[in-house]
Image (tube, helix red, strand yellow):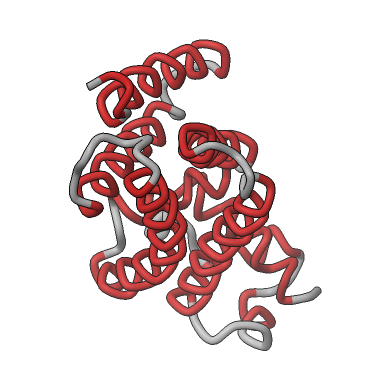
Length: 195
């Protein structure tokens, strides 16, 4: 039994049941080990949860890095749209990652709240760097109406976070309609051609 297999099973259980409702006995049973044997691979449930959460955040950052390469030559509008659409598609295709992220951020275990928040913010730094470059480009070339970079960033995160929550409410077809509607209103709001 490898550590990666243990983490994969742990991700599924933590995503489905949450931190508090997932025991090391549950994890050991799913991987075919005795609980005592599990300790040869991990230090504690807390350490395992934090590592799984970090892996989830790292996988998303890797996705963004790959996405960024594919949109380098696109317009500002297309870059922002692809960042939004790509994030939603990523989490729709990685439901366990989305469920774990939702649980960890909205209902964090009290003892881990600060560590989870710190890991989330470290991962968000890369997203922020990418978005700030796109917004700066849009302001410099006149695609975007004049606004503070921080305001553009905050508005994009609010849109993205709202759509993230809606992933859990709607079937894919209905969700995509909502994404397109929200995107249209958002773009009209920040685009210089609509001012």
